[in-house]
Image (cartoon, rainbow, N blue to C red; front, side, top):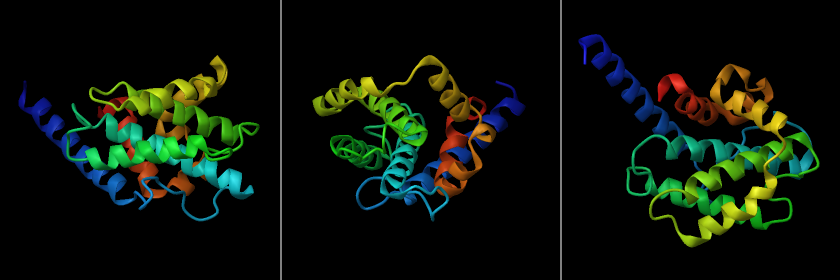
Length: 181
């Protein structure tokens, strides 16, 4: 490895570690991550959708930040975050109203996070069951492609979502962008 690549890799690792700390420090006592302020209007269902989406994105970033998320430095955050998403999934509107675009997006992101968690070595059986239940929340191809573009390129994330997600969303998107992994 050239000196330039070594330095670039070291800088990326330092940015990744700092981003993980921002994400973990933003986790609530209930294991979820919660949107800031009233950047998106729409009542309790919209708030649940915001929180579900932010929790899912934060979890996916933490799970991709190291080789063994269930035994790494952020294992407790991953475990409590997964339990929070499973609890929200069990509530009738815990991830937002599936009839709205925000609710569908939130449910899709939660499904992705639940699927990623269920695929981890040593994942509890209830995580796999939750991932199976979430399969029905995966939208059609066009909506899936739109959401995946937003995750792959932070600049494509709508401004209200970025505001509501605050520093946690910014840090998570940095970890999820292909150029930083």
